Length: 110
Length: 116
Image (cartoon, rainbow over all chains, first blue to last red; front, top):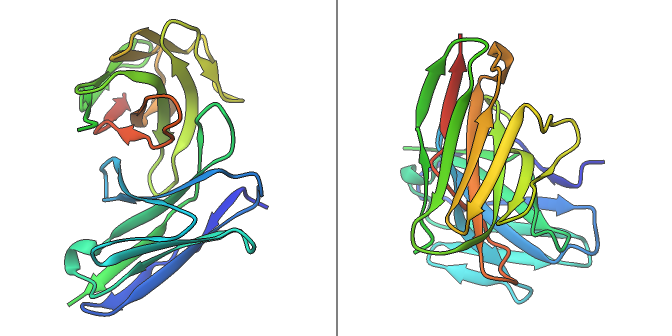
């Protein structure tokens, strides 16, 4: 089993819809969790950190479920510009290394 | 804030030559820098973790004599691909972390290496 798993997609979603995807992690000692966005042939960019209490930034909501060991990302009122690959990352050690999911590809269609 | 630059953005070199890639944190001091490689349609693969003033820690399967990493200051790390081969062609991305206790990594724009 991979340490961090994501559905690769693609998720094809009409503009304006709400879309959600999850990321599961295997190590219960995982400490910090993040969502990154990566556009084609570009570097990943930090979208949001995921806190135990959940957090929201505009149209984006991230949540952590420690009991079931997954994090989620919800995108409301999706825009064409939201089309990208969404990577989840999990920190499990004191070396500050992040373990990365393979990414979920999201395609927003007009 | 948290801007990371990387140079060059792309490079084409001949097989057998060496290529140096620079990674700089522009507005913060990077305690730790990470070097990744990403092949098309694949996820990030961590190559090594670099702490300022100490030797890099390489991931299993990454040849330290082929991928030389130097982290001479809190704002600069370099990756040198020595004796490059076509199979080394890839997208190389660095990231940096600031301050103790902060786990977020901020990425440079990446270097696309093509070895002919």
